[in-house]
Image (cartoon, rainbow, N blue to C red; front, side):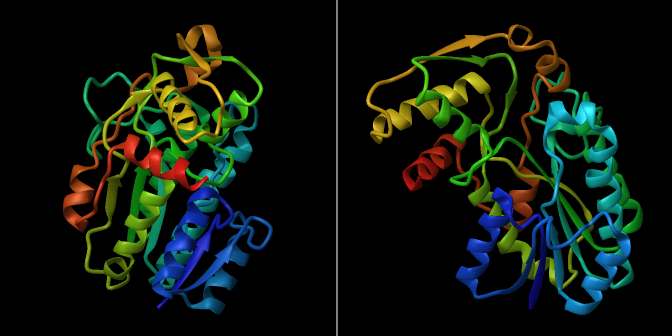
Length: 292
């Protein structure tokens, strides 16, 4: 069994590779510099050469604000490149696991979203990710799309490390308290992905969209407060920093306009189908901070 990974240098890619090594699975890991997924011929050639049993696509343009200024690049990476992978995987009959986002939802629902709920992105980022989903559904024979939210890990470039950086410099930080979603440990998602790989390789599954995020939703403010409390508890900081709640509109108008007010994900169907453990986000956060 061999596994082909794009976006291997991101926090999810790195977390998955850790889990693959535990299983002694053979894998081919590609970062942006090693494989240009926006080039159809390069993708097709590489897949034909490696002949993997499955493709895991973690490559993504994730900067929500910057995407508004660079829509062509966001759509190139999140939609056109995904179409390349979908077409190539279909031609070679290779199953594809692709990661999408809760930002495909508008955010006015009063319950956690399931995969059947209507989508309506507020941002270029959300729309580009949705177009990627649509390309996979149209062009790929065997696929699993997993929507997740607010990934964090011991690896950098996520909200956890942003807060860690801020508390080293400031005694007070202001965090948005009126936008809610489900913080998700990249490690728990990685474990889930690696667990289902043998099932997907056998192609004994129905191609569809699933949701996976850690249990329970919270605001950015709740998330930051918990981070600060744990950093203090485990003596990463000498004193507790004040976390002040503010509405999104006071943080920035663009922050409010581009992000759903509520985008909690219901992971029940995915977890039952594949017998996946789904911890509370607070427990996941505690484990990650312990590992820093």
